[in-house]
Length: 320
Image 1 (cartoon, helix red, strand yellow):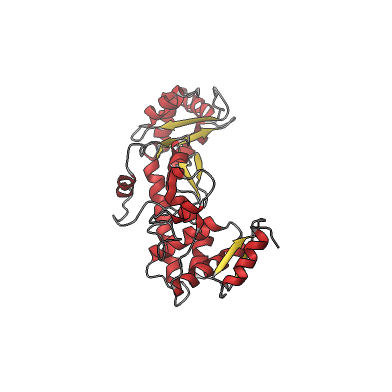
Image 2 (cartoon, rainbow, N blue to C red):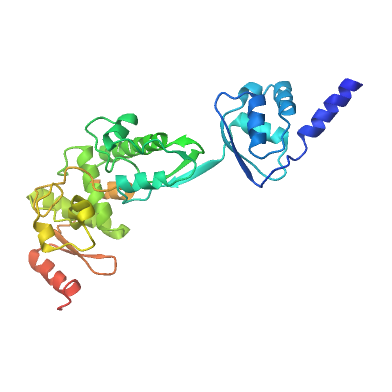
């Protein structure tokens, strides 16, 4: 009879709501924790959970060896039994980090450093050391190497782990896009496609213009014309750029000054998204060699210099 009463009391306790210091309550359990240690950690973080009762519940149900470390959330009304099941499944609370298209590598690192819940482990590393840690080949530059997307992570995850996932995502996307590229492009490697995609990403955010801008750059590469992309000059200037490009800026030598150099710059200038990758490898079937911003977010495309000069007069100089 006493045994039945103890079992009954245990069943009753396992199905009672856990009293919480705050609702919902976020907590973390360290790797390698036993059921008893996990319960003590949860209690210390604000849940009125009886460690020994939780330990016996885990042991009797055979769940003790299945509990997974990580970050979890206890909502109002959750019982010890439901909590045990959640931890056995590894149903963790996930946080989100969004990396937008067009960001630079430095902007991405700054955002990660300010993101809560991440283990900040790249602050003292050089870009080259970061690339080594994520397993990238030595010749892959960090700029443009990470796919812009929203990444879910458990509290306490490493920045290196998130960066590795973003890097692997870009390599997979780039490989697929390169394998399906249009024929006869003036691009020799997937890395060149990534560079071109980064220029397209920075030149426009308008979906209807991406393939046309890609066509202008591809057409220029084919005939040996300088790409003359302002975003590449700005990228090469770094902190020296203060909001306005001058004639002197366009005449100053730099590996990224596409008014002076021939062909593509040496590395991407930003993180291109999927649409920019597709545009770079599937440019529009047009002969345009020029484009100019209309001032409303769209661009005017021209086949000849005379047409382009007329478009500049109309949309930039406002003389027509």
